[in-house]
Length: 452
Image (cartoon, rainbow, N blue to C red; front, side, top):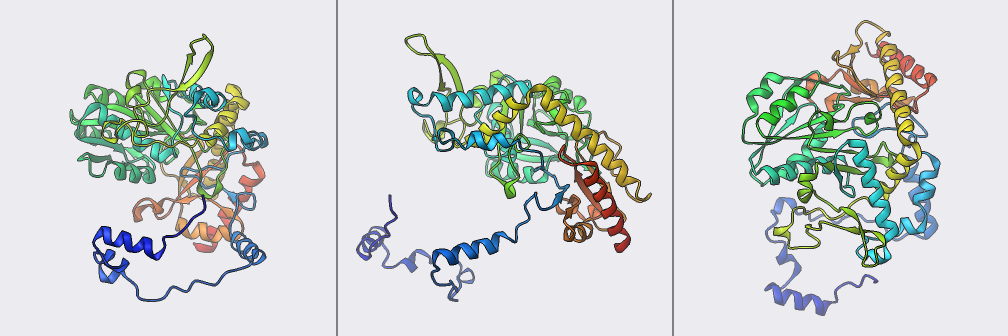
């Protein structure tokens, strides 16, 4: 349907119904200091060719991953995306299909979602998965909401080693629900278990951890889970799906809900999205799980089929009765993850994980050999990401090296206080070659000498 603006007569009817005489009266509650009387300088219309030139000029300022050497991570990673994934998800029946409300004509779409759910369950080791969510942050926030519905308590404990951006989203979701969000403190990426023991009590809905954590470290969380269980709190984990190719799933040490960012599974960086949040839980909590769930069934003639099930969600029932108020999901990116997992299989995911592990350790050892003032911030084992302490500002290093086409990592001071000013978070995926790691090492060595 074409967009048709309101006519003057339409506006007069609306104003009369609202009890105002003009549009300006609708804005009276806005503080005067927030209203600008300056005329906005909007350029005039452009022809098609002029628009193309303008957009090309703007897009040329971008720095896609193919033009730069990136060791940045902190939640989005430069993994290899097999070429056939885009080909498959670009097929018209996948690319344009809408929500499968009518199962009798949507079996293909429903089956792809069911297969995706099955793969996430196998990957995480939990019983049930939903059809996906917006991203890792929203998935974790929905897990916190879900735990609060189940336990009906007034506190959430979040490890200080969880991605700070995710924590902000969790706090936003819980705002107004009278649920207190407490942080388990960390120093240089190491959690303080003594403070954790002081913080946790019978009023805690859940304890939230990241595995591997934001600093890339793999910490022993077993004791934390045991303590949480003794207080009746749920255990929520945000995980790296590629790491599960070689690491034991948190389900093995008691996780009740496992979420994560699915971008590493065949989804390009794309300047920040669209991404994919995966979400799995234990069977007893399935009715409180957010988002859509596809189940297998049989029709009246005994034929195997797929349907949306357990639809206690806002789009199907009254909002105040719904167990979840999130309705959309990233079905196309979920399909990409599904194709990625099926294409690589268990051995393929394991191989990708092993390459990340070996290359990141090789890079860390090489970088620490530059001089004695460069060292890892802690002695914990790590997977594909590690934090370095430098003798100079990490921001200055990134700024200098970016000019030569290398992003050496992410400055931890972007997320934490000034004590992290010289700390650099470095991510090394299976895409990075020995030559590229050597370029990082030589570039960092040169840059530090210039700054020091």
